[in-house]
Length: 478
Image (tube, helix red, strand yellow):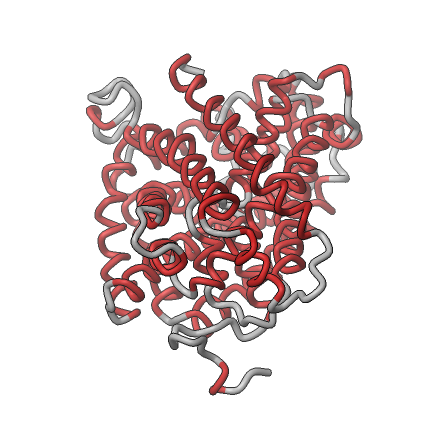
């Protein structure tokens, strides 16, 4: 246990109460909808087991070195991304990489809260029996209508955006230990319990064995360059790299903490949860393919519809009747909501820390003011699914405002930010100084030379490949 005197670092910003708290918070930031929903979908679209194998290799070879680099920047700078880079390389424009990270997190929050609000809505629906199809109605028609009713109804979407934003803001406003740490210590164990329970139910479904084989057994004949590139991209995005989260969370670490092992635990936890999510999703979609004769490609091609239309349809047809649908459905959407909340907390903390560190604002005022702004900015994204025509697909932007913001942030800003951070640590700052920071908590850093090579050469090239692939995909309309 830490005493009140050591609950702050050298500039009084606060510290994590324990190493476990940091690992859970950092893992929670990385564990978002991209793990529970995006990773299984990407695996299904890119060959299953072969994709998973390459994904894990990319996590170790690229994701882990970059995550360690961000943690080093944060603990050495003891500030948010902007302040840390200013402190480490004063009088240079490198702080702009931090500005990009803060801005990216701010923009992501403005549309991420919309999808997060959907998870809250569907949890309430599931718990209240809303996934039970009325007698005489086709399930596909019913759930398609339920999704359209939610996305085309401004009242529903704005209400649940408000609920989710309120929860996120309240936690961040309470501070590092009293807010983020306390909430994460509850949410992450609950998330693991839900994962295990859902896997336990999924393995009993017809077609589960085929789903596991597709997901876990690599077919090396199906591995292509495209598989490798998409696995690399998924590994990068699933770890929340490039937006300054790990810099901010790392700034609350004590100097005696072992950064390499902490980074390893965070990466391992995030990867484990992503793999566990696939152990739920694949048996369920193979159950649908087996019982309804629906091709796998048609299921995974639904995008958001897979989670909010197809998945509820499958849940409504599970063996066990009404009770199984309610319990399994409520647990699944509660899992999504918790994953979304842990990620949103980290994103808001990045921006809040910037306002507190660099603008000298009171934390509570900064967080609540930011929460209000995020809520207002989220409304146009919430209305871009059909409620307002000019904001929706085919409107003024050609694509929906939501898709436009997603493309700019996830596909462009994040890889640019991560590339900048890798170059900063590998070339602009000092690998010697970075190693000295690591050695404060890890005197015998045996992988020092390997990390130097990875962060200086391998990571920048890998991130550049991701960025080029994203740009080609955008220009090609893929």
